[in-house]
Figure 1 (cartoon, one colour):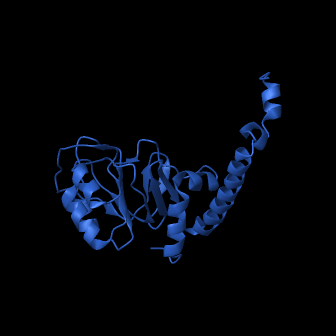
Figure 2 (cartoon, helix red, strand yellow):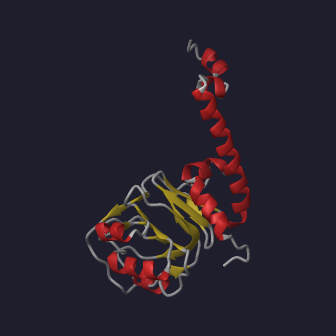
Figure 3 (tube, rainbow, N blue to C red):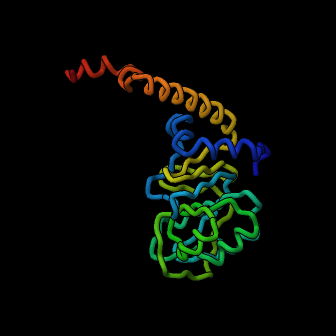
Length: 216
């Protein structure tokens, strides 16, 4: 893992800002595609990524990864978008909760959704599937993985909530926190001015654009 350690306080700040603010604050970069969503809308996660590259319909490497994760880590699993098997379920969730894992993001499916929700473990996935997996195929741990067009490196910070998931490169975390705070401050002022009667057209300087398009 990188020597550039991210503090717990910084991770909490990014979690509180939320995925949409962080995405915009870092220049509209790092958002996983909209197919990756929490299995319950109240789920939120933030933490450093432990990346796992697995074969579709085989979860051997997840068993191995669970020997290596540390409290606060987010498992980021590339299951190649395969939706006809659920490599993660309630047994893994029980172990993850006991070990203090912060959450799971998987480019694939999970099963036992109700049990996972009841345990309060944040899971972000592409779908649900009742079918199980084999436990035979090798994979890779803590290597760069791609979900859609976003590369996630080990130690990158993953932020997920109801809107979706965004990834912050670990060496950019401090800058993104500053940019996110500035964006939050600006939007708070916008909301205050709207309450005083301003419009979004006025606040964002869109009058000229509307005139140019003959939108009176």
